[in-house]
Amino acid sequence: MRACDTLLPALAAEFSVTVGQAARVIFVFAVAYGVFQLGFGPLGDRYGKLRIIALCALACVIGNAGAFFASSLDWLVAARTVSGAFAAGIFPLAMAWLGDNVPYDQRQVALARLVSAGVTGMLAGQWLSGLIAEWIGWRPVFALIAVVFLAAGGLLLRTARGDAPPTTAGRKGRPAMLGILALPRARWLLAVTTIEGAFAFGAIAFVPSLLQGHHAVSLSMAGGIAACYGVGGFLYTRVAGRLLRRIGESGLARLGGVLLCVGYLSLAYVPVLAWAPAACVLAGFGFYCLHNTLQTNATQMAPSARGVAMSLFACVLFLGQSVGVLAGAWIADHLADSLIFATAGVGLLALSLVAARRFQTRDNRGTST
Image (cartoon, rainbow, N blue to C red; front, side, top):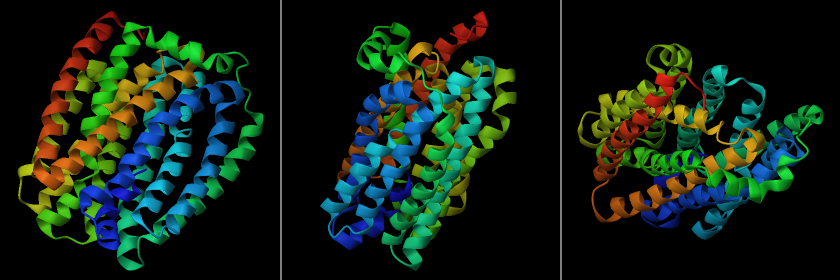
């Protein structure tokens, strides 16, 4: 999901385009990832979440193999579209599976552990892609991803044989989706998540190119610094339970907004390279404070059709990302890339304060719905 962030300068040089034009590989992945959620959620509810996750992982081998052999930017964009489409069935269904198997009062911590796995992937994607591209070239990045998907998908398919799916929810995918959208609580949560995706992911995609443009660092160093965003997320997973007990969901949302604002504004306007890793750590920690709170609440939007609900959640998150990346690409090409981070930081702070007010009511009631 994050491998192409660090590769943008290399892809721009390879295909003789601007960084903004090369960002299409991120934009199309996000669009495909968001749209195809709507199909995999019902499939997971009907045929078993683990089984669908395994098949999607195996299908991702095709998209990454296509990226490896891409002879033009259009070909690479098409391959990333395929990868995004099938990757759509992995993480959201994993969240839904946890929602089916973990009580709500333990779910924030369980989801934080799942996020820890995702953060490990983000760290590897952003850092290793730059390192490999600098040493060998950008194509082996996609070959490595394809091999990992092949191994993981095969192992998980074997594990999924014992997965016992519900027998009714997946057959009512569209009615269940309409029922979820009819709930004011769900509509509010989905709207907030869309805006979060636009601001947060729209900015993080341009961290490596900003570092290269402002500080003239290598691909591997830019990727390593950007990966500190994931380090912040990993640190969050270590203390999520304690933070939740002390400050509640509303406090987590507020803290997330403040840290995101500080981190992104620092990246935009603090001209000291040594501070950039700390800024990324702050932004990453803040993002997961806010995002994990949103996704924990999303697992309760529709307990009887959790696969559909989490697919909707992921759909709007990554459609928001696609809008954010598209806007960021235009700003990078026509204005100043610092504005991407300034806008994201201020916007996320405002969003977190709105979310915190809603969660404060829930914290005061001491309920989980």
